[in-house]
Length: 502
Ligand code: HEM
Image (cartoon, rainbow, N blue to C red):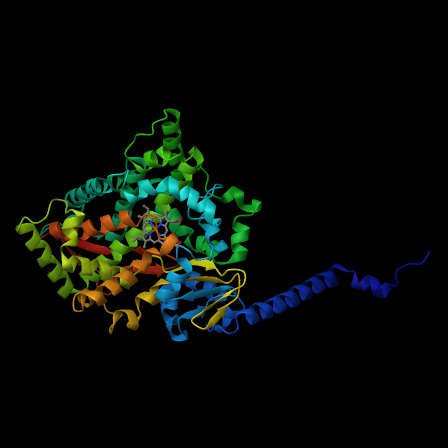
């Protein structure tokens, strides 16, 4: 019997097999990186992003996605940020690829907004399936079936009452207040009130119920990695990790909120209670199933709390650090209130008649568009040429909202400065165009944010009511807030002293 020569046995030893495996992996990595680089080599961007996701990973680890995306302006309006990612700050490109008749579907980037086994409107890739579910939800989101303004009024009144009773500083009492957290609780209460007919009571409890906001903060890096990096996305949604995903049976975190939502939905379906004047009632009346109602009401909370909170906190931050703007807005508010031109809380129609308030809201969005980048759509199979640049089929093209909002072409000089006057010192036509561009923070076309009516109602009321009742002063002016940015912003430690309005 012939035996294997000893020099072949050496080749089969564990050390040499590991070495060969490693070598093959390195070879595969180099070849696939070259192939990835080659495909989109004509699109400029950071070199490291042309063959790897390291540019994104760096932003995620350092929490600096916003400044890094703003800095991409130097490469032009179509910039490569990953092997298959391109972002744009050109409003016309975004309108084109997101338009009602566009043939660009959602890229697989969207799947990772899923937080339980069921898909919701935002995570569905199939356009027809997403349109079908959207049709069942539209009346709830748009306010046709839900008294959005009444719901927001109730929560604003409660916020003002709560600040007055708990967070007020006087000449004899110093009461530092973390406005970042107060606003986060407010937006959570608004959205749960509108969705389920009863707020979950974050502000009343004056604490992070079920450790929800803490758990979102703790996992923000892991969540963003699984959103942006295909390999991490695959791992996060593989059967390997189903055990660690949020579950309705969890005692805390997102799972706990899913559990509470599921209980409310189950009770409604048990009693066939379809008439409630909230979003859940509307979804049921328009034929959403029990599972769809659980996922879609939870989505309102995920999509509608930290986004709106970012807009409120950022605008408040710029207001309290810009005395000229603060005083001018305060004067407009006091004049409208003393002339009895406004209700209490102010109505949206009344707020729209206050030009400076409107300019402040737009400028706040411009300085900090709550969704920093993303919303990638996939180029159709044959590819498409945009502004003279060929985009091969399957390339994911997304929005660089922060760079778009800092465009001199769209907003004139001094784009890094908070200056609401830019919306007032121009022709009506120029103002309308700037307003249209700011509106892109909600996306555009067929994919536009479903909850923008809710957000606009909140924003039209909150600054007026906060500044009508109170004055705000940053306690640490050299570091008024801790801010990080991923696909969304996070704000912590926004310590202010709040006093009765002078
Ligand atoms: C200032 C606040 C907000 C901003 C800046 C914002 C921004 C966005 C953006 C950029 C998108 C994605 C658009 C795309 O895919 O191209 C989106 C989608 C969505 N937003 Fe908002 N949003 C805000 C508030 C809200 C609120 C309050 C709600 C809930 C009441 C909400 C619910 C949703 C939903 C359900 C989607 C998915 C829509 C779909 O799949 O068609 N958002 N939002």
